[in-house]
Picture 1 (cartoon, rainbow, N blue to C red):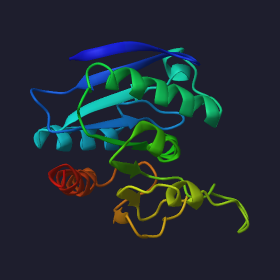
Picture 2 (cartoon, rainbow, N blue to C red; picture 1 turned 60 degrees about the horizontal axis):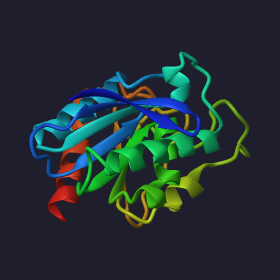
Picture 3 (spheres, rainbow, N blue to C red; picture 1 turned 180 degrees about the vertical axis):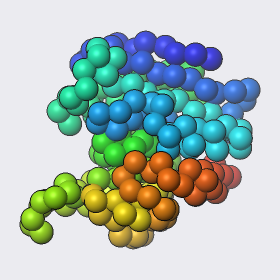
Length: 204
């Protein structure tokens, strides 16, 4: 269906819609802090979802649409994300169940806004648990994951320098070969995401 530009309180965002015919649900994914929606893990998840009749929306944050690489503050990222979801829920995604997710920074946004967007699940690719190359007292971001009350899948490279989040109630953690980029095991990423997404949407 192509790309649509959406006004948010923090600038123009862009949503790439790959919904297919009569999707049984949709997964909406955000990019990492310095990357874009063509990251290999996002592409792998998108294809896996579409192969199962699940629609996909890939969202570019306003700072990326404007050509900047440095990410906006968390509050602006969250505000822009929820504005995009609200816009699409009133139009292309009306009546569809929604899984929210993304890679790295995008995963954090999806976690923080899961309740606000009405997501039935959260899919985290390379969740950045703790800043790398810091002392042992570097702050953990586990509270962002723990705040999610709906089923959550975390797909993490086994050598991710940001660490490996623990599994918990409502949270499955799958380790695949590779590091934070999740480039090394696209088949593993695809398989984990496919099985979990099918389970989420079949449960509805």
